[in-house]
Amino acid sequence: MDELLALLPLITVFLIFYVILYIPQRRRQKKHKQYVDALSIGDQVITDSGIHGRVVNIKDETVSLVIKKGEIEILKSNISYK
Image 1: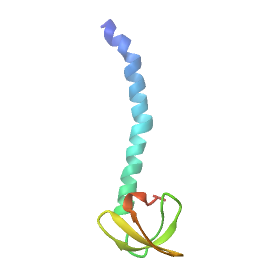
Image 2: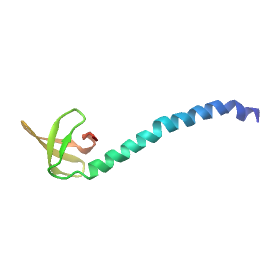
Image 3: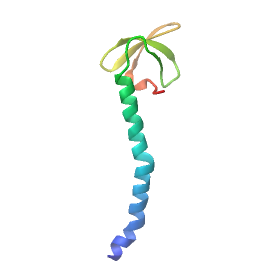
Image 4: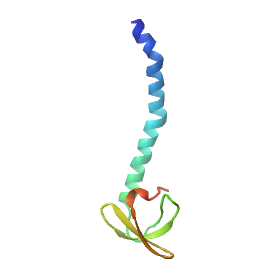
């Protein structure tokens, strides 16, 4: 019984970190995935690096964007969630 009471502060800290860090991060990832899955041709997007562009082609893992100076192809995961 004393061993369990000695571990109680450690368990409490673990639970606090789980609630404060892990759960919100999982929600953000879920929203980002929904946003990327809902992309369609013609959508205006911003990449993680700050490049603004319009979607012109969507493949399995990549998206082609038209920017002022031409066209680029990036990974879907690099599109920022607004």
